[in-house]
Length: 387
Image (cartoon, rainbow, N blue to C red):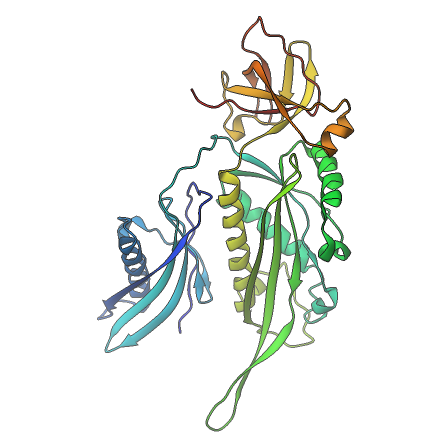
């Protein structure tokens, strides 16, 4: 088996179930470089899978960009394809044949507003820190979180990510996550960061194991390492976990048992295990982005002045002057009650219009002078539906 490419392109993802389609292509090597032929064969195999699914994507539509990784490759293109797994690659009689499984999103548009979602990313911790002693990678959780933030920032235009240097909850609560815990922590994050979504989780397993392949004369023993990621996406305003997934990968551990690994060195991230970690993170990031795209945008009111209110959403999130929003309020009399018992009711006669917008904030007023604006901090605003 050869090693393959990590492919990344921007798309607007949708929150629907994808389906895996098999594609295959064969290309004669002749006098060309094998790496060039491999790229061509992978492109053609992806296009073949897309065609079987009814999506007309040619090999020329697929742009490949990335580093050599393990046998899992990932791609997103044209809003239809988001992941590719190389199933098999053979070279027989100077003909390279590639078989792929392609994760294809059905063409579908959800009833979603156009604004970028605001996300708080908290630190992912090791559930079993003792597993980090092999390689002395005790900083592994922080490194994984940073790379998750980087992938969300670089490759997911629908998400505005804020990385914080704290965990959402201690590892001791992993097996007993309940609503009361979530409600208290969610209310604090809303107050502090004025963002709707929180991404948190745990690194469940980074254990080492030996993989044994029986041979004619002697067994082939390789050292491999697990990577299991538990991911939760929380709507902090509604205090609901809207996505919970577990992701697993494993790769060759190319280092000695007692060797100290520098996690800031690219040599680690170019190793087989490092590439598996990045691929696994990318799978989680794609699913988070897909989920958030079709969820409603709601923002807490940051401040109120006579006739105006402010929200933490601005031009970088797609807000423009003249955009319209609705106001939601709670029947609970206090802010604490509002945040702990989130039952919101729309003010039926009030439409808010953006009068001034900055990079990360906007000032809204009533669009009808005959309808007064009566609001309080931690009331909610949501985009008004298009008429």
